[in-house]
Image 1: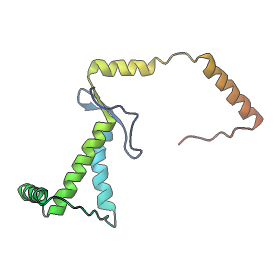
Image 2: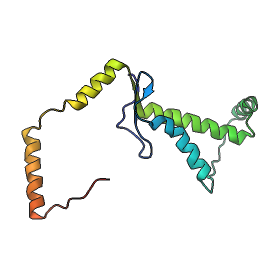
Image 3: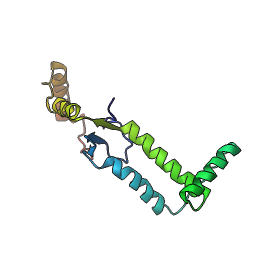
Length: 140
């Protein structure tokens, strides 16, 4: 598979379809910056307690020192943020080559004519609306 499909998404983040490495919308690029902004704007912080193998802690401490992090906590937070963003992007973004992207757009634009079941449902809905059995609300 070439990537991720735009219909599966976390509600706060916009989906993205990439064509030849270019974002068709600005979702993924905003994902990391949105998380950073939310973290910066939060007045309180949540606590995460972990029990890990001492060897893993030493490995993280060495990596933290090599990256120039101010603390092990800062390094771990950055690592969690980066991994989380990557996992979310892998789950929500489809990367398509030009041919696949064009086929996807063509399929979306060439919707089939409504079948009898759909037309019947539309008639039932219209009838319910006329009778006042159905309330019409705007979708936001």
